[in-house]
Image 1 (cartoon, rainbow, N blue to C red):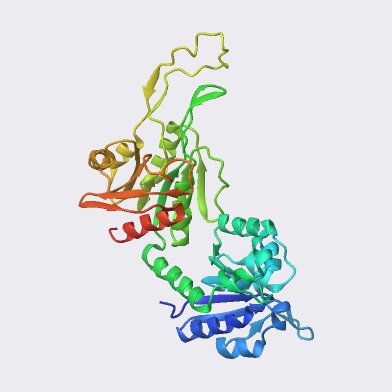
Image 2: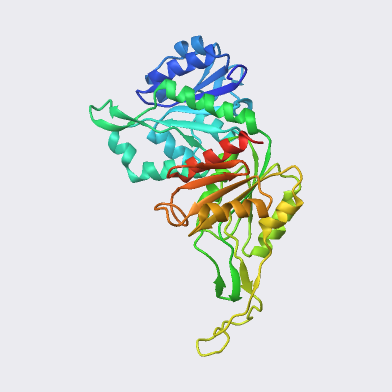
Length: 398
């Protein structure tokens, strides 16, 4: 799995740096090409000789190698060379610099130049890890597509016991292996995803909409990106941060705008996942001015149906694997199966508002996958875990 993969390891100043020696050894034994960059403070904990012996490559820590000859370390080349950049351990200091775009050492310059996926394994003491600034910085990394390998829980260098230990080398090695494993199955596939609600205008300040937060669709887009897919995300209005670089993002408001955006990308897509909660109706006439409370305009709003985007895609389906979403309050499975058949879907993700922790606005979801041949029920999970389940199911059928 790792043979021939180009893996760049970044090491920062932490006592956990000694563990990275074992990681470098295992990666090299697996046939990966390994290059190592250390910050100056990392060299207080570990020697370049050890790392170069195990990686069978020079260890880099300075921009300038030889002042007399002008030989220097090309951080851009390193960033372009790697298939994956893993920073382990990631100290609180370097974490803050990554998030804020600082560039005062070779590791940071390479990070800013890298166009490959990036993983980090934080390591710090208990209170530092739980500090709100650290948690905010980790959240920002995740939002921008960086894979954060969770810290361990146990005895720390300070003598305290709790969360903050760098993940064990075998866990980091496993995460790297899983990354390349999923890459090999969907890498390069074109994935089209819709997310969020649509707003259908009544007048300049009012609309018909729903409670969709877009969290499920954004989680699906991030999972697709991490699997090496070419991702286009079409989103209705949400309060979520715009996805990081690498995901083609299209913002729409109405069902009509979403239909137009989907139609322009559908023909080239390999997998289409329609998780958006598109309004079924819109006002037949939109008022040009805000309707006053005393006016008659809002007493009776005549509605008309919006285009059923999912059904129209089912009719056009050629090579695409088409996934729909449904949210029901009663007879969920029966209604879901009818939707699967009537709209010519390959897979339907069924949500129920009767399940606690599922549905709109939550960070978790409880779903059932409905296929032509049968159903698969899942337990309540974080929406990123649900996204992973969705892609695992697609990989088994595409």
